[in-house]
Image 1 (cartoon, rainbow, N blue to C red):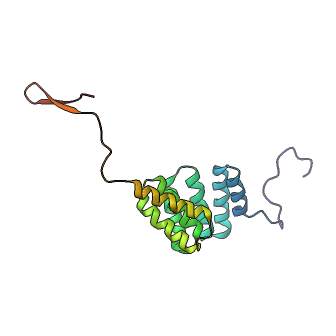
Image 2 (tube, rainbow, N blue to C red; image 1 turned 90 degrees about the vertical axis):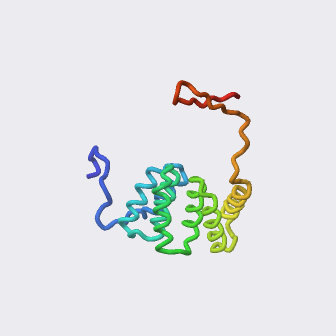
Image 3 (cartoon, helix red, strand yellow; image 1 turned 45 degrees about the vertical axis):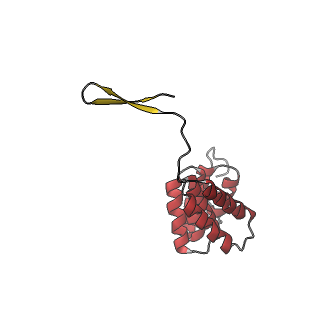
Length: 163
């Protein structure tokens, strides 16, 4: 129906559609993370939940700030293929975002080893995690404010700051 005023619907029978993973990757590059997520779900329907699809879904969720979902999907991807470097790297990023620096550092070490140190991005992530791990301390920084416990009435106490 070339003279139809409506947009074409779907793919004509016998024609190939563009792979959802490719579309999703292009959308991720252009910052369209929600649309990329939809493309990755289409890829899941086409390819099944393989390591590429799971890792891509995890990456899109990471970019959307859905850290819990991203972590779950990336861990699932690593159960499918424990040598898939992008999933290791992105899991490390998720863990860093969640403040799990120690685990992130171990994950980045794994990604770096599997990648044979070839990726500058993974090396930078590893160095950042090591630096954060080294600079973190178990002792809170000194607080200069002082507090006083003041009794009010017979059994009521109030904590006051005398800063």
